[in-house]
Amino acid sequence: MERKRLDDNRLSFLDAIGIPPARVDAYDLSYEKTGGLATVIHRLTLTDLRPSCPNCGCLTPRIHSYTDKRIKHTSLSGKHSQLYLHHRRYICPQCRKTYYEHNPFVIRASQKISKDVVYSILDSLREPSTTFSSAAEDYGVSVTTVMNIFDTHVRMTRSVLGEYLSIDENHCFGRGADAYVCVLLDFRTQEPIDILPNRHKDELIRYFRSIPWEERNRVKAVCIDMYPIYRDAVRVTFPEDVKVCVDHFHLIKEFTQQADEVRLSVMRPIYRELQRLRREKRKLECLPDAGTAANREHIQTLDVEVQKHSRSYYLLKKFHWMIFKDPNDEIFDPGRGKKYNPSLERYMNFHEIREALCNISPVLCEVINVRGRLVELYKCPSGEEGSEKLYELIGDLRHSGIQEMRHFAGTLERWSLEILNSLDSIERYYEVQKDGGVLIRDRRIHNGIIERKNRVIKLVENTGNGYQNFDRFRNRLLYVLRKQAAYAADPVYESLKIPADSWKKEKW
Image 1 (spheres, rainbow, N blue to C red):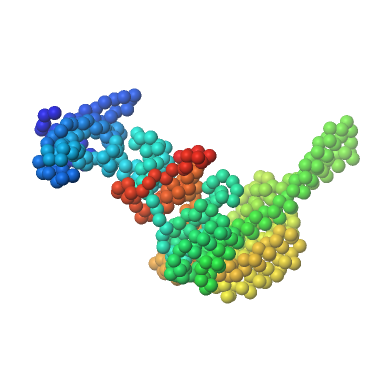
Image 2: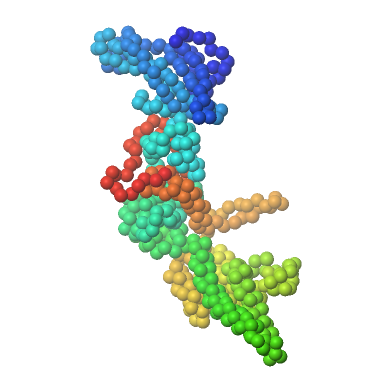
């Protein structure tokens, strides 16, 4: 191939593939179209630099032969790109060893894809919605190649424990005790510390004990959901003065579940009675003597009862969320505007609808009252000031006539210390208002941040159609979740593969 003068078009393509013109001895650019897909073909020969012999250091090697190597390159302007390198092979006149000239396009000499493709694949895998399959399709390589690239370049390690730690789980693998992964997060930095394959007590204790005591001793508080194994593991492995806190969201979730059971216990008999009344009404209307005065009066009475039960059922079904809502919320202001409700056949606001709900059964009023007391509890500035309200609430619920509220009282009692710990603030911060004013607010530890991370974890797991290789799954999650996650420029790790005798089939 003769040396040619490079025009502007060829110079721009050389710049795109990262090669200076002075490094090129001969270059040719062409296009091929196969199956409707355009491919850019770069044929080039590098400048002869006569590298010294790697065996004996001889400075005067001779050209032995040439080998044409095909290298897959990144897509340019929507077109796939192929490099055909006319690769020199040298021979040392002293030790007779043969060797190739340096290939600047690949990371390893045996690779058939350029390092730009490798780095582009690794960058694309930062997006949680990108899968190994989609990356393989985008860059024209096999799924196995993408997985091997990721495994050999990305290996995420545990981060250092911060002062405030959040622990939560995420359902990722099938069913049973091993279906959950355990997520550890630094509350202040909002960065994941590590992801564990399960939430077994022995495994958690073993993991925390493997962390140096100096790190564990810096932890001041740990926020968990209402899973007792987390509390037990923290108490065993962390200093005694570490506060274990229950996440506010999970406590309200527990109350909501119990309150919903109360609602259903009220709604079910209303629905059964409604169905019975409708059947009886239809039966009377089908009788030959349905037009008699007695039957007409009976049908009218049934119709009134049907409407009454139908409206009660409608309220419990349509506006059940009012039972779980803060009763002091501004939407329940009696002075708010009213809207016409066709099912209730009248103009009503949310305050009046909630009153109609309470009129169905007094137990609903009690549940709404408990929700209001929980709101007041979390308004307390510290656990010390909130203890009286909490224990008073527990005492009242113990004597409640509602079974579900008595059950909730037991939950509050078992987690009372952790609930009070969650009321203590960990720091203060300043909030600038729209009018320029500044408010000083207290920040409490919670698991809201880790719940947002869980959505990303679920996205990675679902779009990937399930992972059976936990090490690869963990690396992928931490690579996606950490803002400053980096990959190794050179492959420094072994590929993560499931043993050949494993019954599980790898998915991607």
